[in-house]
Length: 141
Image (tube, rainbow, N blue to C red; front, top):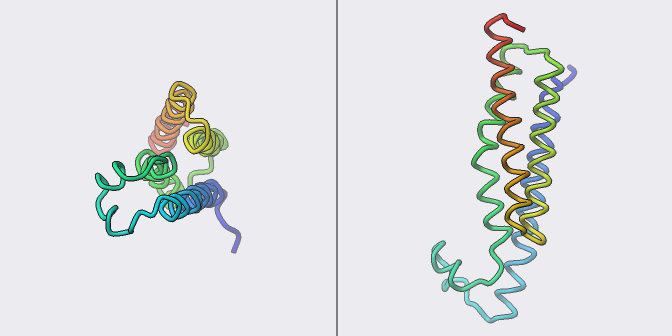
């Protein structure tokens, strides 16, 4: 059975989450070792923020469970209803691309306005995706 084309952008997002998750632990554990921070001293999010200097990957990891939830819901809804729209699929891939850019900016040099531009464009693409899906389901497209 061939996979729906909607599966591939979802898998790409999962790959992004995995990459950020790995980055999180590849930065957090060495910092804790270097600064001799006992794991129990960072048992809460507040303690973690106060104790650790580099929160970029952790902040980005949390971001990947905000708007992307609507992305995954859109893709699953498109699969379930048999949506075959090149425009909708292009919007899905555009959203993935902006999330990759957002994560890269957030986890590296972290210039807020660059990050915001990627985030805002991704949000616009995501809501446009939902608009196209709605139009397809309504029979307009």
